[in-house]
Picture 1 (cartoon, rainbow, N blue to C red):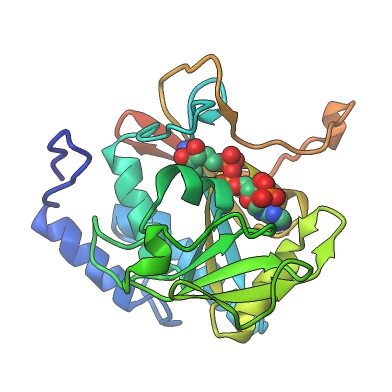
Picture 2: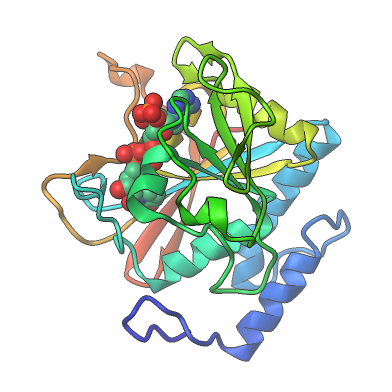
Length: 268
Ligand SMILES: NC(=O)c1ccc[n+]([C@@H]2O[C@H](COP(=O)([O-])OP(=O)(O)OC[C@H]3O[C@@H](n4cnc5c(N)ncnc54)[C@H](OP(=O)(O)O)[C@@H]3O)[C@@H](O)[C@H]2O)c1
């Protein structure tokens, strides 16, 4: 894998690429062999968790954030390219390739105008979802104009009608809950469309809302060795007054180049 310095990863070692393609092919295969390669070690258990969820007629949701040592995902002005290194960016594209749908909040679309496609590894583009309750996006952003993958825009039912179009995207109107749009309802709507592997890619507010609602099965936090000292926060949850109220999930740890990724498992 080579980073040319412009954010583009040009080539992966052929054997790594072959192992990745083999893993992608086994994504839904209940008879997949035990983990033998590093790729299997990282992604195999996620494929199994997704299969188990779908056997129960449910879905599987996993969040990911790249943050600094001091817990920031971007500057206050919204610059986040790039907090983490090339390995974590490749990992993010692999997570997109495994997912049926990739979810981001409206601020991420405003600041990054992302494509949310799979470009750094083999794999199909997931359907793209943006949560924009107040209809702040005008349809000029790339996810509404390119034909790379279908896009859904989730908006509050008092601001939108289901089936409306924003550019090439379809609006899905859902009622407001106590804390915005209910992440469980978003998962249910996606599952009804056959989208059962949900990758919540950011930003901090969106991932935090899923976490606060208990709507994440896994959360991956990649910690990069830099300190911003200010900026947009990673996870923010309602205040606690005692450490006994903190979340202490089971974790797995992976080294991704200079970064460390910690994966939290919220399944009981
Ligand atoms: N380092 C990373 O891993 C990473 C990843 C992605 C993005 N980013 C960066 O993060 C920044 C954006 O992150 P952010 O935390 O400010 O915002 P964000 O999560 O991208 O978007 C948050 C907004 O989305 C809407 N939203 C999300 N979930 C909702 C829900 N369940 N119900 C109702 N509304 C919901 C709300 O819109 P309203 O305000 O209209 O109510 C909310 O304020 C950008 O600078 C981007 O570059 C970093």
